[in-house]
Image 1 (cartoon, rainbow, N blue to C red):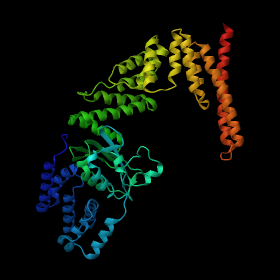
Image 2: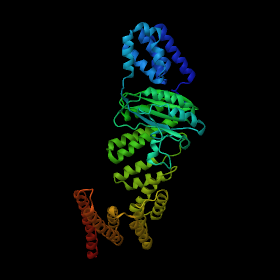
Image 3: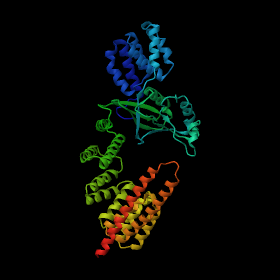
Image 4: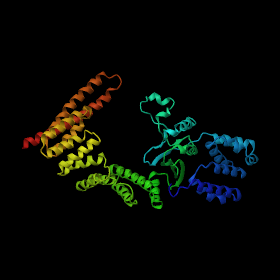
Length: 489
């Protein structure tokens, strides 16, 4: 449990203090205690009942209806309890109570909620549970109102057909709920207090998890932790509802409340924004996110992460600084658990711009063992060529050509250009001639399909044929370039 969360006993005392002050001294005196208490439990049933009764005494129908609605959403039995309370009966006429009852039941739209897990880190959030609690959770699941935008989703189970999704859920086959709305737009019909009440109801069944609930268009986010079956909540108040501003708030939070889990999460959010900026943003944006990452407190218990040096390498490479990029990729490869992308980029760069060809082969081989991608073969072949091992290079290229779908033969064109620019015209010719053969084969397939198609209009195939013709021109341009070089020798 983290510094800004309160224990169950602390929260009980805080709400009791707020309610006692409300009863004895009124709302103005109780406001400071209520605001603090609601930061830790925004939908505390007892407090909303007290506020409904308070607003009944001052005959404020709008505020009474607000708190009355929350109470009814959390537990429907409170409709009769509150409307039957002496204070309410004496404060409002039967017509007014009927009017407020109707207002409380009106269908409303509430902000769409985004769920992001801090630990274990994921999006959406998964609420895992042990088999011992499946009977209780099955009963809970079937008490939910599935006519509304219920956010307790269950993923498709292994072996099910699409039709099985409309059948009763077999709880023997699942071990988690997924918190996620499947709606278009930015509003839902499910009140947020229902979600909080449901989480509190099942928290004793749920494995430890920590996550954020971010409502669209609202200047707050709720941090939720379930630890040893107990639900803790803290409502963070932010200046805006933009994700970057929320992230900035949490960035400041890790300094105020040192917390490795949140620190790691904030780091990965900034890292994701950094990668996006390297691909699509400006130099200023890239520098902004690098600065944010560099300003974070150092990790104390987390192994060295490969992705920051990898990102720096990508940025250096984009700016033409190949030596700097190579150094960063090597640093990433020396980190803990470097991924496929690290070995791929390092191996490619070593084949293209360095003389480290055996190391290139080693890194590309590791990458292919992690993820068998045909795109690795040309770079492996290039490394063999630079070591003058021509038979090995030819073997790589034959394997590569055999794996290419004729519809995607532009990959062979790109590979041919790669070898032509590197000064290996024989291998470039092999790739471009294979591309030429696939180009003609694909053209014949398109013409045959166009003549026999009853479903798609001719314009659709004419567009594909035009694109294929452009590829044909590019292939011949490459082959002509090779012939010109050969004739000039």
